[in-house]
Amino acid sequence: MRYKWLNTVIMMVLLTFSLSVKPEELFSSTCKSYCKSTDDIVTAAQIASDVIGVDLALILAIMKIESSFMIKAKNGRSVGLMQVNLDYHRSKFKGKDPYGIYDNTFVGTSIFKDCLKTTKGNVNRALRCYNGSWQSNVYPTKVLNALKSINVNSLTKKEI
Image 1 (cartoon, rainbow, N blue to C red):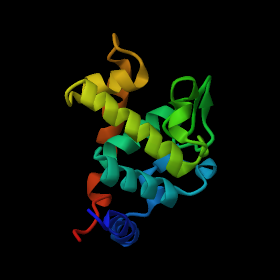
Image 2 (spheres, helix red, strand yellow):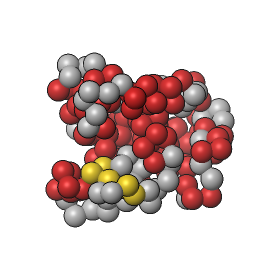
Image 3 (cartoon, helix red, strand yellow):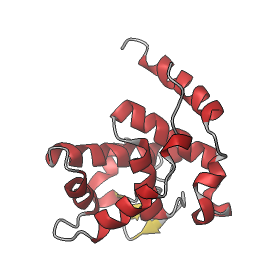
Image 4 (tube, one colour):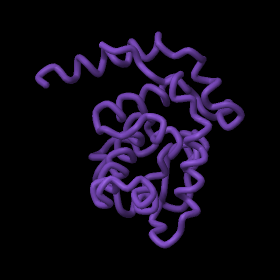
């Protein structure tokens, strides 16, 4: 555990070389020129997945539904790739950029992980928690459908 940061850097390098498809292909028609850097998005999601312990494909599916992979997405008080609501979660950014690829991905993934803990690991209920739609299955259904379109094999990193 002492060198966890080093493992994260190694995983980033291996991820870059282990994708069997170009990151742009992962995002298909959803991600166009406004995505800026799909490599950064995939890398941020991979690191968040490894550090926080949330499935990589699930993080990307949430991003796809929340922001269509648009880094500067904004809907009311929710911003960035993971559409983090600043009214409730501004303090979690600790002065960092809420629109930053890595910052937004880490905060959003941490919020989702808290929802998983609250719901005792129930992904459907955790998605409702994340979206704030406790009484509806519309959002979980969208995310789980998006999850089916993500090729997990193309995202698997080589074992260290």
